[in-house]
Image (cartoon, rainbow, N blue to C red; front, side, top):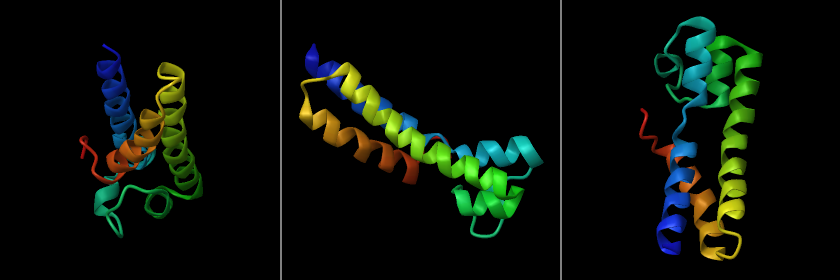
Length: 102
C-alpha cells in the first residue's frame, strides 16, 4: 500500500509540473496563444513578450511554486521516503518540460 502512495505522489508531482501557467496566464489576459508568439515556449520570458512584465513575472513565480509544491506534498504525504523526496522534483521538472496538457 505504501508503494502505491509513493508512486501516486511522484505522479502527482509530474501533473503539478505539467500545468502550463504561461499558456493560461497569457490566454486569460490577452486571449493570445503563447505558443504562437516569439519562441513558442510557455515560460516566463515568452509570457512577458506576449502579455507584458506582470504576466512574465506571474508565470515565472508560478513555475517555481509548482516545483516547490510538489516537494512539499511529497514531504507531507511520505515523510520517511527519501526516494520520493528525490523523484518528486525530478518528476515536476519532467512535467514542466514534457507537459501532458500541451
